[in-house]
Image (cartoon, rainbow, N blue to C red):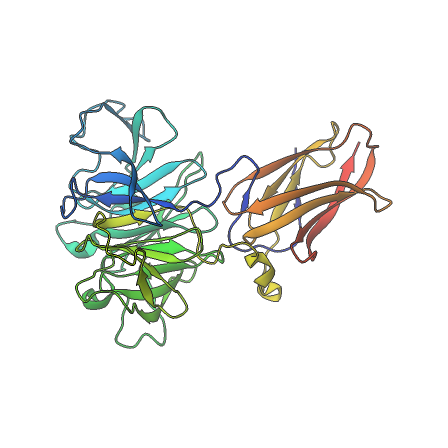
Length: 403
């Protein structure tokens, strides 16, 4: 049955329904076996407010059976890898929609993920050749930055910025090498390809579809995945001279958090407007030095942000879809494909303008749907669906036919 598309806006970030995971103040950290270690093969979940470890997701030194599966179906064995994290991991990204932690080993040419929704330790391996960026003996070819954009699409970047890889996580996952990044016109000597300024680090997505990249030398670039243009923003201020930025995520307050592979005394939060960095703990608190951080939070994704959007700049026609339409059983589904992050109300009114349903929503993660059932007393006919923000402004409206 055809879905009816509501003809309006489309920008970053998407609906999280009432049963979905809300924005959390935690992150997955790639660490060594102990603080100060540089093996980068242990995955831990940490509290971003304190840096404390909440749990250990994977530690190769702990003898636990790991189930490996190739997406090609060529190998479904349990032991063809000695360690899931192999020679070490410098790039990871969390897919909250499917509860998966994607990653790639530094010497590997495959995309992998931990299935965190399983009670068993399952690792799925995608050996798509498009993820192969060349001989990993050359550090330029190593993927060190990975994150999901607001539309649920993953991106990975090599050290030298010569490969921007796009990957999807749906039922038919795809991997595409989009070619190299392009320096912004005002970058000057701060090239996205230069080893001295742009190698290593991590990246995060924002609520508008952009990506922000921090390098190990503490430089920040803003990336547009569609144009591949990387604009230089500046260098972090306030971090110790020996601090290298190797992991970056967003906390539940919309602030950047960076970790270092070289120091284990503190994590730092960063004001994206000023690039000022401050330690998350006033008194130095020993934390795991980390080669990478990953969570699903988006920059600028805070309560009320939806009302700050410049709506005249928003374009597209696939922001919201309603199906089935017409509906014959008084039940329909609303899918929010691309809607700005924030608080909303879904309002359904009948032909006389009387409110039939008002449902509060929190928009945060991609691909979520909301199932709506009309009251039993509701008559057939035409209804109007509206999506309103906190300021009562109507962002979407269209007709629903009930037969």
